[in-house]
Image (cartoon, rainbow, N blue to C red; front, side):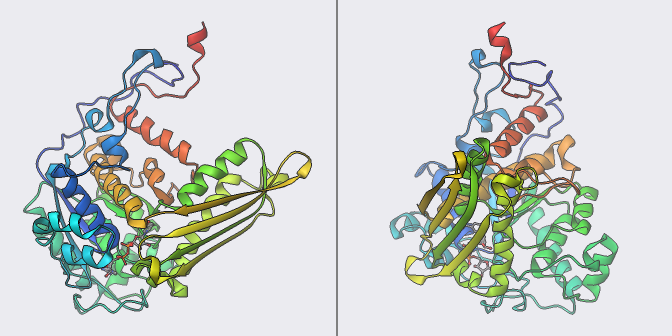
Length: 448
Ligand SMILES: NC(=O)c1ccc[n+]([C@@H]2O[C@H](COP(=O)([O-])OP(=O)(O)OC[C@H]3O[C@@H](n4cnc5c(N)ncnc54)[C@H](O)[C@@H]3O)[C@@H](O)[C@H]2O)c1
């Protein structure tokens, strides 16, 4: 009991969270559409040219105490987050283009805005990448590292991290590179020892994303995964994350269609309305769309997108409503639209006495405009987690599921996909680490 609706006394001491002093180094794997839109956006905000719209950490507030207390600070004033002015970006890509050139190629931001940011953006030049076309069929990398085995490549990434660490105070890594082919965990992913032997043997089960992630975690650097790749979703990486106090979270930025799904599906379920079919299709013309045109990369994305409905609807608990949902997802590469994705959902639902109805959703979105603030928030919150003693050695930061299509959880736990449960979990985690009471929305005390 406690504050309103709330679950408890003040919970933890704030004094133990290390302050966000000095520079936060952000190492971005893949300087494509999402990454350059994030970097350009941060610079635009720093120069006072734009507002950080879509970023919960920058624009969001958090209520503390009772509704009658009128205490709703901004999240960035409540928790000790790194200031945008303290961020230093670097990254890797398989092409040599600097961030200005890559952003111009991605055509997400208009020429006029990009020109204003050009002096800064062209200073960020990619380091040579770890790349193997076996894992991303549609790309031909030219700016790549070579090494005698995967261990050698991991050591080179570690050397990049160590060099960058000398110039900043803290480091976070985020994968904003392409979607790799679908991979399932094998023996090489089960323990740290097996994984390290796999690096020596250049095991085929270890894709580039795992080489970067391994390097980050060994260096104690938090790692976020914006793509649906397997990467840290295996026991060896979870163990490494805990051992080195390097937080990880789920995967695949939750931005367009799945964002809508995880809003609508909980609403239908809350009212016990049935669903017989959910057909989702997309047209997309950027490089991500081109990569996803390869069936093996599409399979990775499809698995990530399919998961949410099953977990939200819990058909085993509600067989009359959700047992036989026909759920289909398509992504079609359609170059004329570039980054401006269009998504359609047709949802066949049924109500009282089984009478059928339909819902149509047509989301004309901008993929990277939606993803950039998500990427920024993940970076800032992982840095916070790393500075927070009660979070940093947990490994998986489930409270960051809010941002991801495929939340990662402790073994045996089902993931929470409902956006509003995720939002509550995130905010309660912030209240918890700052020693504030948790809010449960019970609220009976107002009527005593
Ligand atoms: N935009 C969204 O709404 C959204 C949502 C969820 C997930 N994602 C994922 O985010 C990722 C980035 O999307 P994008 O639109 O920026 O794609 P993009 O193709 O524009 O950028 C990806 C970049 O990664 C580079 N790259 C590929 N493999 C690499 C490697 N091994 N090392 C270093 N660089 C490498 C490519 O050269 C490219 O520049 C994709 O995996 C995409 O599926 C995007």
